[in-house]
Length: 221
Image 1 (tube, rainbow, N blue to C red):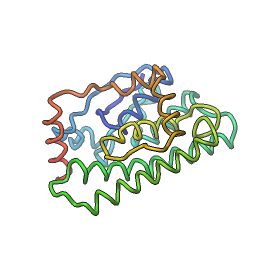
Image 2: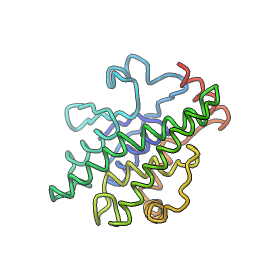
Image 3: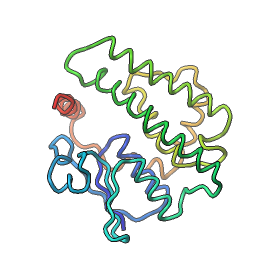
């Protein structure tokens, strides 16, 4: 059994979608970010960086894994699911997973901060991160004009990771106009039942305006 500590964020959804796609049993623990539960001592013992998601694998000596990409790879390797058999396909999967970890996530995250949460409106910062996010979308679009999925002809962890972020493009203020390959891919993945389930766990609770206010406070800490 997997114990999952997470919240309703793109990185959190990477873990829930992966678990749903793999059909693994898990218990979900909703970490209340607005209450700084990720900074509590018990959580910091699992992840010293104080970030979600984190898993504890009860069937593997309570082994703890943090960082969303590391969680995805651990689950694929340990339970041999969504784990490409051929070295080249596996390498492509990891490359596009790292593309999300090092590019899509950080750039869209900063776009969110300056576009939605930062107390001052800094047009140059907003433009910088929205433009870079759009450039990365164009890289994905080009790749998806070459193959059905990011790693090739098979759905993989790379698709989960990038989709969980790109699906929130409106929140970052970044358009998908003209990116027809990316739109096709987004629609295909959005139709997968496990992906649909994964982005509803944990459920967002509370008034949306209050959640935004909480996020605004968090980025100032």
